[in-house]
Length: 426
Image (cartoon, rainbow, N blue to C red; front, top):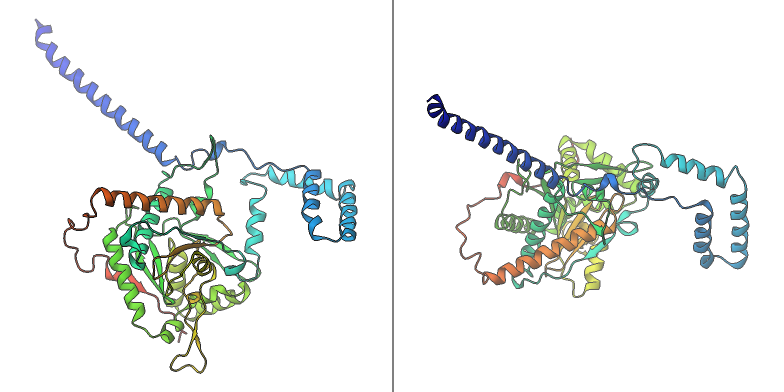
């Protein structure tokens, strides 16, 4: 019968069609899952409530409560009368409050406070190193082998790059307050961000696709590619460690006067107006200078390898905030020159990881676009990764390096591990 002849062929075709359909559905499911995972970090943004605007009377009450401890009884009484008049005059308090409510309803704004908040930081003209940039002191690495500077720095760079990758691909788990999701937008500014000094006010530049980090040692600035074309970390921990050791040794080959001549980062400790003028002058002196500054701005973060060994958390905190000052005599200089760790900073970068000779470490961050909550989460995740690495080393009996094959000389790529040289131009 024809049915007997055609039956098996029809069944095979049907099975092939079913398989093709299943493959298509599987591919679609994997695509949907991939999109869901990639949108995990910012997946709750659209559903987050807006920051509420307090009532005018509540705002005035809060203002008076903050003023009272700082004013004399007479001054506070005068302030109360001024606030009462402000509340009752329809052309003052009520009118301004209504304007704020209308401003909050404009499109493209996440919060009524955000623009004013950033403007307040960026318009500040005093040095940011001691006035706005906060810091965190990191717990010591629990791994005995990682108490040296290079080993600790390698671990922190490696864990930081893993965190950066999770931010960039959107897989970082959202922050929660119990069962309530929190805003995650600040994490997109944690890496590849720089504050640019300007006349009157500063600006902020974001480079979400940057692939290199900065390394500062004794005031000299180096850069190293760490992210490949696929957006993933392109170096192993061993390669990172070799590169950092090479950079450190190179910086030690110069006498302090030579290093100080290249310590442009020291200028980021100055007033914003002065630094804006000097940066413009440096940038205009040569195309090489302009390229160097651009590469500094674009870096994912900066690693500072410091010439100090803090004996306490207080000393580590001081070093993380503003560095050390150490004036020494130097051949060729009439006066003593600065050799402290204060020359080994670039305070305009959004994130600086500071590692001392004894492995003590801290974080300094530029505050205009990042709050402490985001950096604390970063520090916590990096330390957690350190603990997990320590536990894995215990599990393996600290034999993971013994089984590694030989590493090629120059594996990190000499042409991608370079120092900056700033000049005066022609």
